[in-house]
Length: 311
Length: 262
Image 1: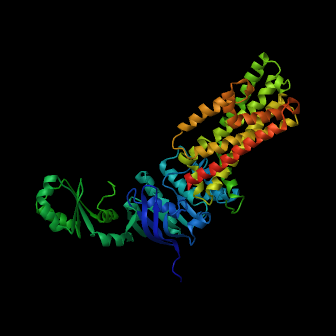
Image 2: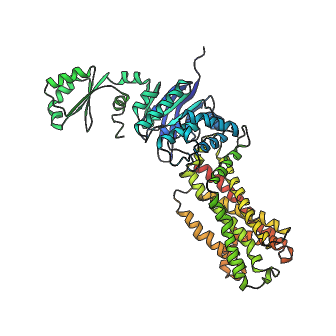
Image 3: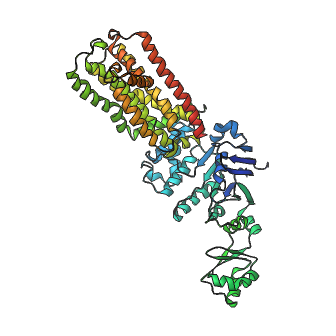
């Protein structure tokens, strides 16, 4: 068996705008069938990277290959095989759900009858079949996102690009969307998605890169990243300021690492329950105490010194 | 431009605009056909009862004189409407250009598709009004047939430059300006209701700079026929101005679209 072909390959990829550098030289390799996440806070360069891969924004410098072709030369041919879910919806809200799919299908040169057939199938897939003939405007945010995903699949793409697919959705809508993406992944569709939700990346991605300030600061599977950059478990403490002061020594003794955030203190430990008991014996009076498994959020905090919420 | 499968790429981009028209065709017909008919009724026939035959136009009735002017004014109105807010929306609000550009379509396809759709709408709108003027006996066939391409050409002379402007805008303020300080004054002073020779020289000069008057003169010469005293040399001059506007506008639009969308 030959190794899976690289769907995207980038070397020293740079995107500069007039007044700022959005992507400052990144290397990427995404393989066929993989579900690949680009993680990072707002302004990290995720969207610029996606727009270059989507062949709508030309790289300033570096090498980029998508589906074995050069975006500078073969833009239309590459885009013919991509599915794109942009960060901001580009649905026509004055058209019906079905019309949004069929007009989009025509951009790919798909005939009318075939477009209608695919629209029907895709609306089933994203659970919008019962809304096929209603206008898009009154749909909920989650429904619109699902429609955008259906639209991105209308050309049966080899690579699906999703730029912050669940930003702005309520938890229920996010889970509904994840479930659809998960089933695409099961079918072997190659996914590249950007997100600033760590749980999303853990749920959906085989492999991720963490971006910050236009650079890649870490790369690997979610589990490997956690193993490399964090302890196994985390103890979150809500601790009043004077308790932080008086117990500083103890906290540093029981943990591999202590991260002080404005609203809480994070202790990186091997066994959170054991440490919690130890702190209680030591007289620490926390307003709240939460033992949990380490997540990508902790990896991000470690790598960038910032939590994702305040970035 | 790209070619894959059914039809040329830009025709597929253009097809979108016809689907989108289905949801707002009433407004389109009202602006492009009914409004000029109201003007024709109120001014052409109404005020026409107070105005004798127009000597400089071979003794045509006032309604005959005004009808081709309103035809070209309708073309201007349609062209400017279709190349202002719809263009801005496709960039900024409904973002349909961005949707199209995520597909195999190129910036040129997107522009060409939209421009083609605007042209077809121009033809439909002016065609509707033109048929009405024929039915009312205000156009002298067969020459009057040439009033149609004259009106469409005048519309295109507006559409190109206005699309080039709209695609770059970050606020719709300038569009209001275009309507208030370009479209409306031209409509009133651009030769639609009275020969521009009746106006002071500075007004005539300003009117001659814009496409409307050239289109009106052409359409009027066609509609009233060869007996109305227009000379071919002058008419070809008008054609040249309109073609120049359309071509320069197109070139400006290509540059502006590339800059804004790629």
